[in-house]
Image (tube, rainbow, N blue to C red; front, side, top):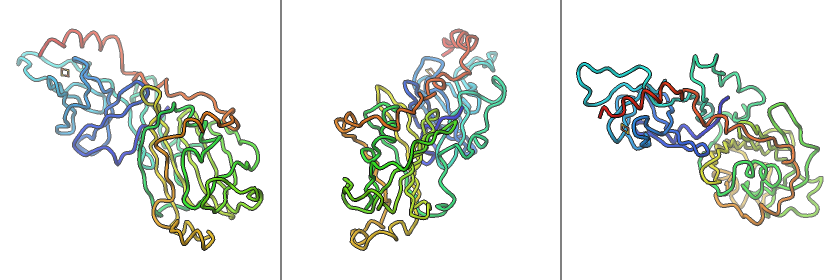
Length: 337
Ligand code: FES
Protein backbone atom coordinates (compact mmCIF):
# COMPACT_ATOMS: atom_id res chain seq x y z
CA UNK A 1 0.00 0.00 0.00
CA UNK A 2 1.45 3.37 -1.05
CA UNK A 3 0.53 6.73 0.43
CA UNK A 4 1.51 10.18 -0.86
CA UNK A 5 3.17 12.38 1.76
CA UNK A 6 4.44 15.43 -0.11
CA UNK A 7 5.94 16.99 -3.22
CA UNK A 8 9.36 15.89 -4.40
CA UNK A 9 10.37 19.44 -5.38
CA UNK A 10 10.17 20.47 -1.74
CA UNK A 11 12.95 18.11 -0.60
CA UNK A 12 16.27 19.98 -0.53
CA UNK A 13 19.32 18.44 -2.13
CA UNK A 14 21.47 18.56 1.00
CA UNK A 15 19.13 18.77 4.00
CA UNK A 16 16.62 16.48 5.68
CA UNK A 17 12.95 17.36 5.28
CA UNK A 18 10.34 16.47 7.90
CA UNK A 19 6.82 15.36 6.96
CA UNK A 20 3.98 14.27 9.18
CA UNK A 21 1.57 11.39 8.68
CA UNK A 22 -0.96 11.63 11.46
CA UNK A 23 1.04 11.47 14.68
CA UNK A 24 3.96 9.77 12.93
CA UNK A 25 6.95 11.90 11.96
CA UNK A 26 8.91 10.88 8.88
CA UNK A 27 12.14 12.39 7.60
CA UNK A 28 12.88 12.50 3.88
CA UNK A 29 16.31 13.11 2.42
CA UNK A 30 18.27 12.48 -0.76
CA UNK A 31 21.00 9.88 -0.86
CA UNK A 32 24.27 10.18 -2.79
CA UNK A 33 22.49 9.52 -6.09
CA UNK A 34 19.73 12.07 -5.44
CA UNK A 35 17.17 9.34 -4.74
CA UNK A 36 14.64 10.19 -2.03
CA UNK A 37 14.86 8.09 1.15
CA UNK A 38 12.52 8.00 4.16
CA UNK A 39 13.13 7.10 7.80
CA UNK A 40 11.05 7.37 10.91
CA UNK A 41 11.85 10.83 12.28
CA UNK A 42 13.22 9.46 15.53
CA UNK A 43 16.76 8.42 16.24
CA UNK A 44 16.88 4.88 17.66
CA UNK A 45 19.53 6.03 20.13
CA UNK A 46 17.85 8.74 22.23
CA UNK A 47 14.72 9.51 20.19
CA UNK A 48 15.92 12.87 18.88
CA UNK A 49 14.21 13.83 15.56
CA UNK A 50 16.52 12.83 12.73
CA UNK A 51 15.21 15.78 10.72
CA UNK A 52 17.38 17.99 12.98
CA UNK A 53 20.46 16.23 11.61
CA UNK A 54 22.59 16.64 8.52
CA UNK A 55 22.90 14.83 5.23
CA UNK A 56 26.52 13.82 4.82
CA UNK A 57 27.70 11.84 1.82
CA UNK A 58 24.15 10.70 1.15
CA UNK A 59 23.58 9.40 4.70
CA UNK A 60 21.68 11.07 7.54
CA UNK A 61 23.64 11.98 10.67
CA UNK A 62 21.78 12.52 13.92
CA UNK A 63 22.30 15.97 15.42
CA UNK A 64 22.81 14.69 18.96
CA UNK A 65 25.54 12.02 19.13
CA UNK A 66 26.27 11.63 15.45
CA UNK A 67 24.97 8.16 14.75
CA UNK A 68 24.64 8.01 10.97
CA UNK A 69 22.08 6.07 8.92
CA UNK A 70 21.85 5.04 5.30
CA UNK A 71 18.44 5.55 3.71
CA UNK A 72 17.53 2.35 1.93
CA UNK A 73 17.18 0.10 4.97
CA UNK A 74 17.90 2.61 7.74
CA UNK A 75 21.05 0.77 8.88
CA UNK A 76 23.40 2.56 11.22
CA UNK A 77 26.68 2.95 9.34
CA UNK A 78 28.64 5.09 11.76
CA UNK A 79 28.87 5.65 15.52
CA UNK A 80 31.49 8.16 16.60
CA UNK A 81 33.98 7.16 19.29
CA UNK A 82 33.61 3.41 18.92
CA UNK A 83 36.63 1.51 20.15
CA UNK A 84 38.63 -0.13 17.41
CA UNK A 85 37.47 -3.58 18.52
CA UNK A 86 33.77 -2.65 18.51
CA UNK A 87 31.57 -3.19 15.44
CA UNK A 88 28.13 -1.85 14.63
CA UNK A 89 25.57 -4.62 14.51
CA UNK A 90 23.97 -4.90 11.04
CA UNK A 91 20.60 -5.03 12.79
CA UNK A 92 20.99 -1.63 14.37
CA UNK A 93 19.18 1.12 12.54
CA UNK A 94 16.28 3.51 12.13
CA UNK A 95 12.93 2.37 10.78
CA UNK A 96 12.83 2.84 7.02
CA UNK A 97 10.08 3.19 4.42
CA UNK A 98 10.09 2.35 0.75
CA UNK A 99 9.86 5.49 -1.37
CA UNK A 100 8.50 6.05 -4.84
CA UNK A 101 7.97 9.27 -6.81
CA UNK A 102 5.06 9.65 -9.22
CA UNK A 103 3.85 12.81 -10.99
CA UNK A 104 5.87 14.97 -8.61
CA UNK A 105 4.44 13.37 -5.44
CA UNK A 106 6.46 11.33 -2.93
CA UNK A 107 4.83 8.05 -1.90
CA UNK A 108 5.76 5.84 1.04
CA UNK A 109 5.12 2.21 1.74
CA UNK A 110 5.61 0.77 5.20
CA UNK A 111 7.08 -2.40 3.70
CA UNK A 112 10.69 -2.66 2.63
CA UNK A 113 11.77 -4.92 -0.23
CA UNK A 114 11.95 -8.50 1.00
CA UNK A 115 9.71 -7.92 4.03
CA UNK A 116 6.47 -9.89 4.18
CA UNK A 117 6.70 -10.80 0.51
CA UNK A 118 6.77 -8.46 -2.43
CA UNK A 119 6.43 -4.73 -2.13
CA UNK A 120 3.63 -3.52 -4.36
CA UNK A 121 5.13 -1.68 -7.28
CA UNK A 122 3.71 1.82 -7.42
CA UNK A 123 3.67 1.78 -11.20
CA UNK A 124 1.38 -1.25 -11.05
CA UNK A 125 -0.90 0.58 -8.68
CA UNK A 126 -0.90 3.58 -11.05
CA UNK A 127 -3.59 1.99 -13.18
CA UNK A 128 -6.76 3.65 -14.46
CA UNK A 129 -8.07 3.74 -10.92
CA UNK A 130 -5.12 5.57 -9.48
CA UNK A 131 -5.70 9.26 -9.46
CA UNK A 132 -2.56 11.31 -9.09
CA UNK A 133 -1.89 11.32 -12.80
CA UNK A 134 -2.53 14.30 -15.04
CA UNK A 135 -4.38 13.55 -18.29
CA UNK A 136 -2.11 13.08 -21.28
CA UNK A 137 -3.96 15.88 -23.04
CA UNK A 138 -2.43 18.30 -20.54
CA UNK A 139 1.08 16.91 -20.74
CA UNK A 140 3.57 19.62 -21.47
CA UNK A 141 1.13 22.42 -20.64
CA UNK A 142 1.47 24.80 -17.71
CA UNK A 143 1.74 23.65 -14.12
CA UNK A 144 1.99 24.90 -10.53
CA UNK A 145 2.14 23.20 -7.15
CA UNK A 146 2.06 23.90 -3.44
CA UNK A 147 1.29 22.66 0.07
CA UNK A 148 -0.60 24.01 3.05
CA UNK A 149 -2.20 22.88 6.31
CA UNK A 150 -5.90 23.28 7.09
CA UNK A 151 -7.58 23.01 10.45
CA UNK A 152 -9.93 20.15 9.66
CA UNK A 153 -9.46 16.41 9.68
CA UNK A 154 -8.61 14.65 6.43
CA UNK A 155 -11.85 12.65 6.30
CA UNK A 156 -13.89 15.87 6.49
CA UNK A 157 -11.73 17.50 3.82
CA UNK A 158 -12.37 14.56 1.47
CA UNK A 159 -16.09 14.71 2.24
CA UNK A 160 -16.19 18.46 1.53
CA UNK A 161 -14.44 17.88 -1.81
CA UNK A 162 -17.48 15.84 -2.82
CA UNK A 163 -20.23 17.83 -1.09
CA UNK A 164 -18.98 21.41 -1.52
CA UNK A 165 -15.71 21.82 -3.44
CA UNK A 166 -16.38 25.55 -3.86
CA UNK A 167 -15.59 25.94 -0.13
CA UNK A 168 -12.12 24.47 -0.60
CA UNK A 169 -10.97 25.93 -3.88
CA UNK A 170 -11.91 28.31 -6.65
CA UNK A 171 -11.33 28.21 -10.38
CA UNK A 172 -10.66 31.49 -12.13
CA UNK A 173 -13.75 32.76 -13.93
CA UNK A 174 -15.72 29.59 -13.11
CA UNK A 175 -18.66 29.02 -10.79
CA UNK A 176 -18.96 25.41 -9.56
CA UNK A 177 -22.64 24.55 -9.16
CA UNK A 178 -24.50 22.02 -7.04
CA UNK A 179 -26.16 20.47 -10.06
CA UNK A 180 -24.96 16.87 -10.23
CA UNK A 181 -24.82 15.08 -13.57
CA UNK A 182 -26.07 11.70 -12.38
CA UNK A 183 -25.22 9.68 -9.29
CA UNK A 184 -21.84 9.01 -7.81
CA UNK A 185 -20.02 6.37 -9.87
CA UNK A 186 -18.52 3.79 -7.54
CA UNK A 187 -15.52 1.79 -8.69
CA UNK A 188 -13.57 -0.65 -6.50
CA UNK A 189 -10.99 1.96 -5.54
CA UNK A 190 -12.58 5.29 -6.29
CA UNK A 191 -15.64 7.50 -6.43
CA UNK A 192 -16.43 9.80 -9.37
CA UNK A 193 -18.88 12.69 -9.35
CA UNK A 194 -19.68 15.13 -12.16
CA UNK A 195 -21.34 18.49 -11.52
CA UNK A 196 -22.00 21.38 -13.84
CA UNK A 197 -20.03 24.59 -13.90
CA UNK A 198 -20.42 27.85 -15.73
CA UNK A 199 -18.18 30.69 -16.78
CA UNK A 200 -18.97 33.35 -14.21
CA UNK A 201 -17.25 35.75 -11.91
CA UNK A 202 -19.75 35.02 -9.14
CA UNK A 203 -19.30 32.10 -6.80
CA UNK A 204 -23.06 31.64 -6.41
CA UNK A 205 -24.67 30.09 -9.52
CA UNK A 206 -27.66 31.88 -11.08
CA UNK A 207 -31.01 30.05 -11.09
CA UNK A 208 -30.70 29.73 -14.86
CA UNK A 209 -27.47 27.76 -14.63
CA UNK A 210 -29.20 24.38 -14.89
CA UNK A 211 -28.81 22.93 -18.37
CA UNK A 212 -26.72 25.84 -19.60
CA UNK A 213 -23.42 24.96 -18.04
CA UNK A 214 -21.05 24.44 -20.89
CA UNK A 215 -18.52 23.09 -18.39
CA UNK A 216 -18.35 20.30 -15.90
CA UNK A 217 -16.26 19.62 -12.84
CA UNK A 218 -15.30 15.98 -12.34
CA UNK A 219 -14.23 15.06 -8.82
CA UNK A 220 -12.52 11.70 -8.36
CA UNK A 221 -11.43 10.33 -5.01
CA UNK A 222 -9.39 7.32 -3.94
CA UNK A 223 -10.46 7.22 -0.29
CA UNK A 224 -8.00 4.53 0.81
CA UNK A 225 -4.96 6.46 -0.38
CA UNK A 226 -6.61 9.79 0.49
CA UNK A 227 -5.90 11.30 -2.92
CA UNK A 228 -8.12 13.26 -5.28
CA UNK A 229 -8.23 14.64 -8.77
CA UNK A 230 -10.51 17.50 -9.73
CA UNK A 231 -10.84 18.37 -13.40
CA UNK A 232 -12.59 21.11 -15.30
CA UNK A 233 -13.87 19.74 -18.60
CA UNK A 234 -15.20 21.58 -21.65
CA UNK A 235 -18.22 20.66 -23.78
CA UNK A 236 -16.19 18.08 -25.67
CA UNK A 237 -15.23 16.32 -22.41
CA UNK A 238 -11.67 17.55 -22.79
CA UNK A 239 -9.84 18.64 -19.62
CA UNK A 240 -9.04 22.35 -19.30
CA UNK A 241 -7.25 21.78 -16.03
CA UNK A 242 -6.48 18.99 -13.61
CA UNK A 243 -5.74 19.46 -9.91
CA UNK A 244 -4.05 16.50 -8.23
CA UNK A 245 -4.30 16.50 -4.44
CA UNK A 246 -2.70 14.42 -1.70
CA UNK A 247 -4.74 14.89 1.47
CA UNK A 248 -2.50 13.79 4.32
CA UNK A 249 -3.67 13.57 7.94
CA UNK A 250 -1.58 15.86 10.14
CA UNK A 251 -1.21 16.36 13.89
CA UNK A 252 -4.00 17.46 16.22
CA UNK A 253 -6.85 17.20 13.74
CA UNK A 254 -5.14 19.12 10.95
CA UNK A 255 -4.65 18.08 7.36
CA UNK A 256 -1.83 18.80 4.95
CA UNK A 257 -2.87 19.33 1.37
CA UNK A 258 -0.21 18.88 -1.30
CA UNK A 259 -1.39 19.82 -4.76
CA UNK A 260 -0.25 20.09 -8.32
CA UNK A 261 -2.27 21.75 -11.07
CA UNK A 262 -1.75 21.28 -14.80
CA UNK A 263 -3.74 23.43 -17.21
CA UNK A 264 -4.10 24.18 -20.88
CA UNK A 265 -2.50 27.34 -22.14
CA UNK A 266 -5.88 28.20 -23.77
CA UNK A 267 -7.74 27.51 -20.51
CA UNK A 268 -10.17 30.43 -20.96
CA UNK A 269 -10.58 30.17 -24.75
CA UNK A 270 -14.30 29.36 -24.51
CA UNK A 271 -15.08 31.96 -21.83
CA UNK A 272 -17.23 34.99 -22.68
CA UNK A 273 -15.27 38.08 -23.60
CA UNK A 274 -16.32 39.84 -20.39
CA UNK A 275 -14.57 37.12 -18.38
CA UNK A 276 -11.53 36.95 -20.62
CA UNK A 277 -11.09 40.68 -20.18
CA UNK A 278 -10.65 40.08 -16.46
CA UNK A 279 -7.47 38.17 -17.20
CA UNK A 280 -8.65 34.68 -16.18
CA UNK A 281 -6.32 33.20 -18.79
CA UNK A 282 -3.27 34.54 -16.97
CA UNK A 283 -1.47 32.56 -14.26
CA UNK A 284 -2.56 29.46 -12.38
CA UNK A 285 -6.36 29.13 -12.71
CA UNK A 286 -6.91 27.39 -9.37
CA UNK A 287 -6.52 28.69 -5.85
CA UNK A 288 -6.90 26.39 -2.87
CA UNK A 289 -8.11 27.79 0.42
CA UNK A 290 -5.67 27.34 3.26
CA UNK A 291 -8.29 28.62 5.69
CA UNK A 292 -11.75 27.12 5.40
CA UNK A 293 -14.98 28.69 6.60
CA UNK A 294 -15.90 26.42 9.51
CA UNK A 295 -19.52 27.49 9.58
CA UNK A 296 -19.99 26.88 5.87
CA UNK A 297 -18.34 23.44 6.14
CA UNK A 298 -20.57 22.57 9.10
CA UNK A 299 -23.66 23.63 7.11
CA UNK A 300 -22.83 21.41 4.12
CA UNK A 301 -25.50 18.79 3.62
CA UNK A 302 -23.91 15.33 3.43
CA UNK A 303 -24.61 14.05 -0.07
CA UNK A 304 -22.13 12.23 -2.29
CA UNK A 305 -19.77 11.90 0.67
CA UNK A 306 -22.10 9.31 2.21
CA UNK A 307 -20.39 6.81 -0.11
CA UNK A 308 -16.96 7.43 1.42
CA UNK A 309 -15.34 4.55 3.32
CA UNK A 310 -12.63 5.20 5.88
CA UNK A 311 -9.01 5.82 4.91
CA UNK A 312 -6.24 3.26 5.42
CA UNK A 313 -3.66 5.81 6.53
CA UNK A 314 -3.53 4.39 10.04
CA UNK A 315 -2.19 1.12 8.69
CA UNK A 316 0.99 2.74 7.41
CA UNK A 317 2.13 4.82 10.34
CA UNK A 318 4.08 2.02 12.04
CA UNK A 319 6.97 1.03 9.79
CA UNK A 320 7.10 -2.76 9.56
CA UNK A 321 10.86 -2.79 10.16
CA UNK A 322 10.12 -2.09 13.81
CA UNK A 323 10.85 -5.28 15.70
CA UNK A 324 11.62 -6.39 19.18
CA UNK A 325 15.17 -7.57 18.50
CA UNK A 326 16.14 -4.21 17.05
CA UNK A 327 14.71 -2.37 20.04
CA UNK A 328 16.65 -4.68 22.35
CA UNK A 329 19.80 -4.04 20.42
CA UNK A 330 19.30 -0.31 20.66
CA UNK A 331 18.94 -0.59 24.40
CA UNK A 332 22.23 -2.48 24.60
CA UNK A 333 24.12 -0.08 22.36
CA UNK A 334 22.70 3.27 23.32
CA UNK A 335 25.25 3.78 26.06
CA UNK A 336 28.17 3.58 23.67
CA UNK A 337 28.46 7.32 23.29
S1 FES B 1 20.15 10.64 19.86
FE1 FES B 1 20.79 10.26 17.86
S2 FES B 1 22.81 9.67 18.06
FE2 FES B 1 22.15 9.91 20.08
